[in-house]
Image (cartoon, rainbow, N blue to C red; front, side):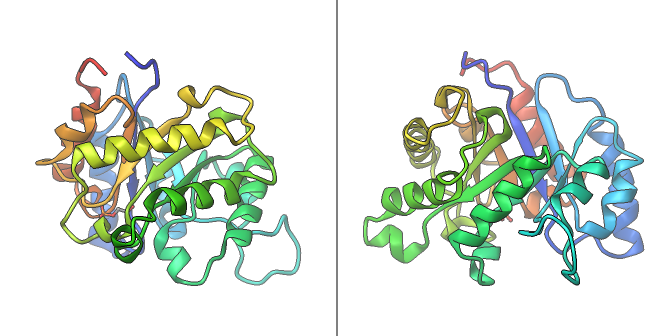
Length: 254
Ligand code: PGA
């Protein structure tokens, strides 16, 4: 047994926006109430944070992003401190959809520093594109993405979760194989060992993300270095999300 508490994260992206979707938020919150051996984080759009924080006892509240700024005249920004005082505990940083929207390593590192200083836990995403994979650059890309984000201000390891999300697997319906994901998550642990964290790399939780669903989740849950999943599409309904929680909740020998 690894001793690491599995963490299952629902990344709702820009979904769950209208009234019917908000109703599902309530059902969802009730359904995942008080999980036992696993931690569940839910990352709604900013506009649904309030609703979820007042209705979901069993989940940790997460954001999908935060500002690089501490405070001040920065129209449109939502700072890490605002999130923290609102009850948010986790923030996803470096998601490939944000990298594709123009976020560079410096910006991601700055956001990380703000988040850690505000007391938030960071789920730092890393992962190679299809082209990088074809060129055999997966490990090089991942090492750079992790190193750049934690290099300038290593957080204490228990404030950091790494999500390995191959870009080609996100939203494509084609997940990495459990073997592939396990090997890369093990590699991530090796990278973390060189990052100057004040906690053993073996204690940092590493998630897999990319087209996880109720059918393929068991394979990931059985891998010794995969401590949970970061989920987009399958996190939008309780029917597809609860089985993912259950898979990691089951007392598998890890
Ligand atoms: P997906 O998204 O589960 O829909 O592939 C994962 C993610 O983007 O975090």
